[in-house]
Length: 400
Image (cartoon, rainbow, N blue to C red; front, side):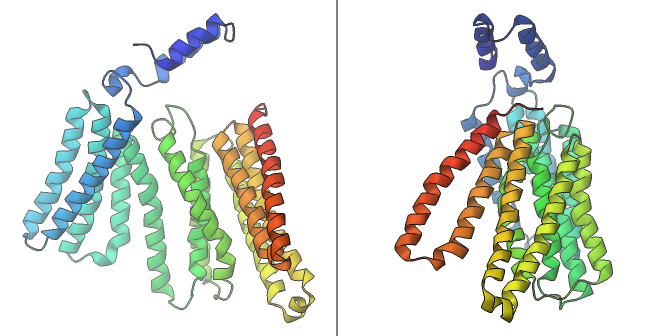
């Protein structure tokens, strides 16, 4: 049965919108790079089936891990290891058997097998009293997911790798900080906050193409990056106030931490190719410059002389919000130049949230309640119209 895009392409050729040579080139590309019908059991898997498989796999993995944990104390050490090994082999074996007839089910079973691997690592570590080495458990889990991705090229493996590798780095950082100095307060949280924001941006820019990491795993990386970008940006916005009174990190700790937090996302962006390295480098510069600007604004707000003056502190806070507005505009322009609507939409949302936060934090409290609500209504109407007009222009802009 012909795909929907193929029938639509034929209609476009008949209407003269696409020339026949271009249509044939599209068919050749899809034949070489698109997923064959056999890969989905003769037809594409629908959204409802995909959701059912994902939810069923998640519930099955959680239920099995809870069942094993509940009966863990009553098992001998050899039985524990045998049970964990049997779970991993059973799910991966089931995935191998289902790969020909139902690849979507095979991907789910392989994903459950990799989840069982992580649970097995931690339960085995508990058996041999290795709880103190829990970052190494995350590393082994990430390596297992990476090996699964190399062999299977399925999205659950790349999703687990994308989550477990940063989790291992975060766990190693927490342990290193704890062993180095316990009186640093919230200061060490600044380093992973920067790394998580940059890494979310790299995931959000996951490339296309069947021969890169962006083939079957592009969409899941994009979703992970998009969902992680919101809390990572909020955390980074709160970092100046959370770390304003904390002592500085030891030099060796700071150099190592910042090297990994900034270097790992840059290396990943370089590996993905394209102009992502330049974009992520600009984002890193924007982040660090914004941090310095926020610290300077806090200095203005904390000074008794300037607090009495009033306008100087207001100017500092206004510059901080302007810097976030610039960040949202840069993200939207990047999406426009690369033809990615989700980046344009996210940048526009960042700009809108920044304007609202500035209005409520610096303008609304200075006005009468009625005037403030009137201004808020005008802001929603006029600002929403202007932002939507800008967003549509960026989406319609031709790519260079």
